[in-house]
Length: 97
View (cartoon, one colour):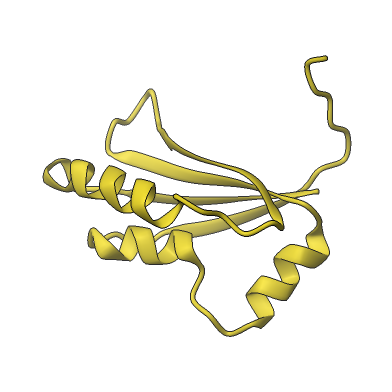
């Protein structure tokens, strides 16, 4: 598994647009994505993150090599924000039984 985190500050008057774009663009997610979250920073309410859990690093790399702009980037750009990307390999995963 791999996790990507896109982070960007979003203007207060664009937050509802961000939520709408996220809901619309993630109504159906590709099978290589297990979960995705739109979260807001608790210390800085202008900072949002899209956290995505990928089935594998290979699935993530395949998407990145496709040349198609990632959906999360498109969502942030739609509200005038430019996100930064962090990528994490999952080393250990636990799940509630």
